[in-house]
Length: 440
Picture 1 (tube, rainbow, N blue to C red):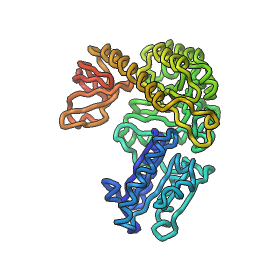
Picture 2: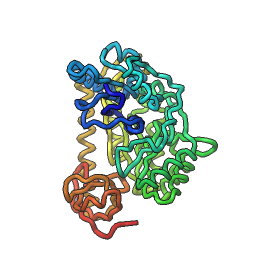
Picture 3: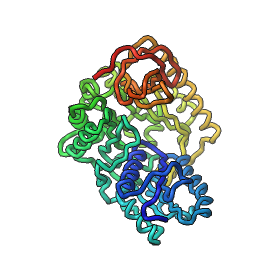
Picture 4: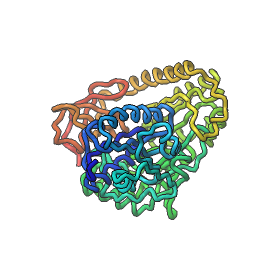
């Protein structure tokens, strides 16, 4: 393999994984490598992984199996694995898939170009799972953001919660918050490069606190950056929703009225077993606080069904909570046991067929609700940030409430705000036509 090669990065997982992949890509580009159009055209394939769900983990081994054939045809092809599966499983990945040359943990993406050089020189397989490394060392200018419109900015890493089903504390470690000045410097740089929107990232981003600045204070500081058009963040934990947090959503002009607030279950017994740290009533109180402050707030959530011991009545409590809240979007997952979690000690006694039924019940219910909620937007005018060119003359973007909107317009509008009159709707998107001149 050439010392300067073509690379391809494949990503499974959340926005944190995507942002890590953007860092790897940027570092490889800065080191003189070039992007390949596909894994088949690459000299180096880096697979960045998620371990939160078993299905996501299995995607890794499916991809590695597919790449074995390519390696037989091109022995010089090098393969790296990073992210949460690498951190969680460690050298078990090498035992299960013997074609991996490089294994990098969640805190060490900055060393991928160095490790690739060593692998090419014949030093592989290399393994670095040092979770004590500083995960904020990648220079801002080297991050190869995958969107021209929305840029991810890491505010913090890790999580101090100990949910029974979750591997994040094992893969990402405890909470480490980035200094406010470092975040602001990155945001200012992104605005100067033409990015209209930033999204602050953290496993539990609203737990942020650094040198006396809490998350509401961080939001206020970023919101004040001149030239920034929109500010978002993900993901939040209900335990860190308070009056200051609600006031920030209400008062900050660039901060969009959208919040992803995972609830996971509507049953107090299940929530206690999950070690979520709140009750059903407590979650509903948080929702009431938020909606009193921001009546137009769009609220989405995560749910796990089929958690060990979940009865039909307890599942129905979750259904009832979904009806009571009226979420704008739901991500419903069937429980899967994860290595090293406390829930692993419980009997995974809900049959897979029943888990799938419960997923289906909630998804079908949510789709009907979203169709109704979106139909109510017809006739309204939404401020839309143009994010993609879907086809010649056809654009799409997001409203402030994160609703996807399709409409006609030229490619030159990419990254600009437009007022769009909503003329049609479906359960997952809105359609419309541009109503007025661009906003500034």
